[in-house]
Image (spheres, rainbow, N blue to C red):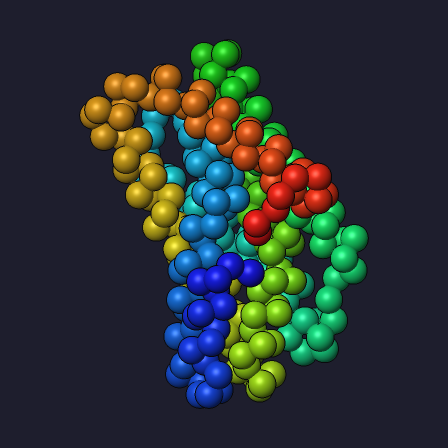
Length: 218
C-alpha cells in the first residue's frame, strides 16, 4: 500500500458512507496510475497505427478484468478477513511481473518482424484478470482498515473496481492520443522498441521484487 493510499483511507475514519464512497472513487482513479499497470497497458495498446479510441477501449476492458479479480478475491477479505496465503499472494505478484515481461517480449518480436498485431479485447481482459489477482489483498486491507460496515465495504469495493476501469480507460486514451500526435508519430518506429525494453526491465525487476530478490516498493 502506498503512502498516498494510506492518506486517502485516513479521510474515511468517520465511517460516513458519502466519505467512504468518495474514498473508493479516489482510490480507484489513483490505482490505475500504478507503474505496473501503466507498464502492462503501454505494451498492450502499442500497434502499427496508434488509435486513441481503440486504446481507451482496450484500457477499459483491461480494467474490467482487473475489477473481476478484485471483487472475486476482495469479497472474502471484506466479509470474513480471509486472505490468500502469503505464498499465493507472492506467486500472483510474480505472475504480474512475468506477464509484463511477456508483453514486452512480444512487442519486441513484432517489431523485428515489422508488424504488430493488435491485441483483442479478450486478451486485454485476461491481462487485467492477472493484474487484479496481484493487488487484491492490499486493497482488501485498505478497505477493512477504514470501513466497519460490511455493506459499505462491499459498495466501496465495487466503486473502487469500476473507477479503476474508468481511470485506466482514460489513461490509455491519453497515451494513445499522445502516440498519434505528429512529432511522436514520426518517431514511433524507434519509440516502440524503447518502450518495450523499459517494460521488459520493469517486469523483471517486479518479478524479482515479489520474490524478495531485489528491493520491492509495491
